[in-house]
Length: 139
Image 1 (cartoon, rainbow, N blue to C red):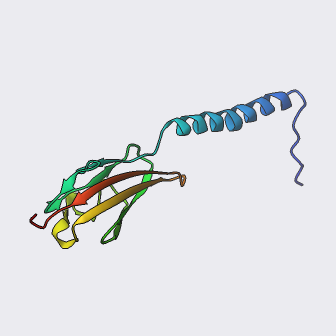
Image 2 (tube, rainbow, N blue to C red):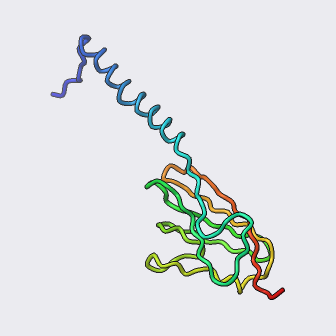
């Protein structure tokens, strides 16, 4: 015969305190720690206002082991998109951690904007934007 489990009155306050400590406090602490850690990529290989020519390597540097994806969106005279799921997070990809590189000669000269958006395992996102010029034609 199965008997229902009973909790003695003397242990109930202890269980209640334990549940509060294990569930409520760590969640608050974790949230506060995550709020302090900004998920914002930084660009490597290009700077704001820079002029690019030929083949270049652009990467998004993102701190933290919880990053699951970085999405790149290039816009202006010609657009391009690319997603990377593992570091190094390289615009237009890599092969065995060797960057493929972006051949800017295949894109028209002009002003471009590149946005890198990092996403972590919790779905949090952070973005960085850089504006630059492609100039391959002789002037």
